[in-house]
Length: 158
Image (cartoon, rainbow, N blue to C red):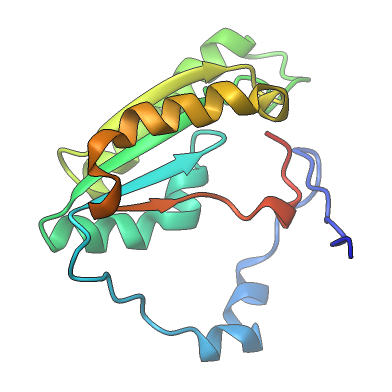
């Protein structure tokens, strides 16, 4: 069985806030209770901002509970606006990483940000390097770590 993957591109219009607010599925979403054995949350983000948009509430909750929070940025997001005439990919990547740092300082002050440096749009070609880096970051604390990563059929290329 294959899962149809919606494809998202930077040129697509975003989903209006009102569409999220009236979505019936949100009524059945429960608050996530962090298991007692969890001492650390590691959030894997293909691009800067993915961690904040997808797991910002979880990171804030973990921080408030006294847990260690780590964010793994696989890319710097330098290709998010390939047709920009105002910013180079290198400058854009630096800006996006700093935006992630700023968001993290509000959501989970003291959290660690790890930059892997994979090419934006090429995460899929670097699966072994991705796994190796996540294993290195999690280290011996695996049993006490909640590892959070994007849902593969989400459609956003890495």
